[in-house]
Length: 328
Image (cartoon, rainbow, N blue to C red; front, side, top):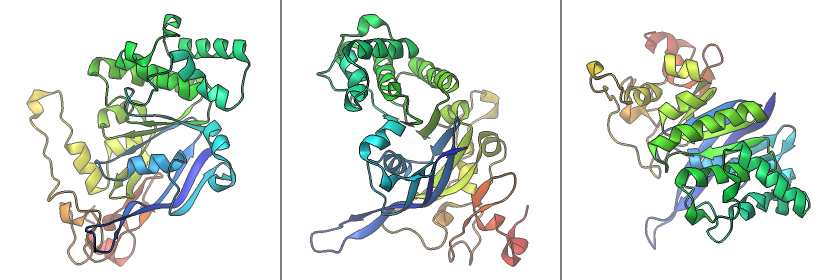
């Protein structure tokens, strides 16, 4: 059952290139349509600048969309208050060092959503906080500690406990382990997996780390320059990537097997200037499967190909062009 959906979501910023020059549009998120099912983990992946964090901020109500709709079940995001929205969706931010108030104790930080939403009296509040500390593996001895007294992993556990204390439907995790030591990352990821199973959580995972995504996600949406270029289950995307950009992302991952050598990175050129995106398919200047006269002229649609996979590529479109150009 769908718990959240967004339809043709767009967020445009206007950026000036000089004092007297007109501002240019930057389409950080450009026509994204996604559906998130209850209990699943949807990973949104792509290079820095592809729009995944902007998308997360819109889902959280931190940025209003320039166009398009976001719905929680049958409720449009524009018809509910910020307080009602926060009751349904909570964030876990990238940096546990800056996402916690240094002047508040662990108890005050975790209890804050309960206070804001008017839940529990004082004695019940402490019991609820302690229960959530147990849930995320935090010692109750840290109840009156300050963030500066905690390790990075402990701080991220506090952030997770704060997000879960009011039992939201969805938790958006924006690079939740990238600021942590490698030894701690696996602990936090396994904790999130355990919590998803125990609480029936729905997770939206924003990440550029494909190893993390493979470990965590049920479904993956690959973004490039503000658009989703491929969407499918984790198995479909990792085992048989369709879009040339997805293939390049997976091909660039280092393998722990020395005999396989260095990966063959096939991305050409550099990431384009989002203020001056290329004509046609935005990926065509870097694409090893570029079709001259097609990819540089028209923009492909995101279309279903098989088994629920959606791909934005002319090589998978139907019709005469597809029959002529698709070698597979």
